[in-house]
Image (cartoon, rainbow, N blue to C red; front, side):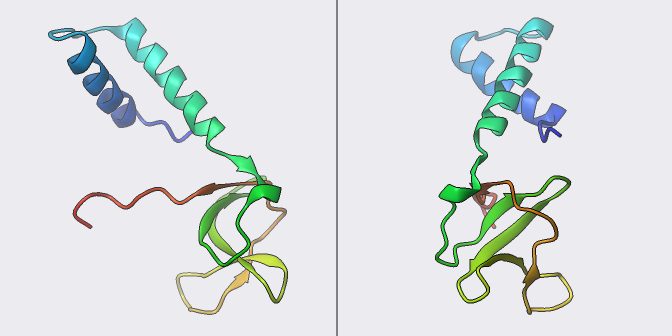
Length: 109
């Protein structure tokens, strides 16, 4: 599963081309290269679950079929999520395989 959108590729290409190749446009090969680079970077962002913080810090965790915002529960010794319908945490469904820090919030939010 990849989270690289066309908008992300275009934004990255725009910044890259503006900085390094002023006036460049219609560079399909470079766009494919940028997409591959961004996908590699996204995959590399995932870290072994053993290295995740266990101090209550909220992070992204990946199971075999989903990604959740979760934190480690020191009492239950398990990864927990907060569902949209309540403030009570529930266990992450499935085995947690990897983690990464939450991305920064959009500017102005």
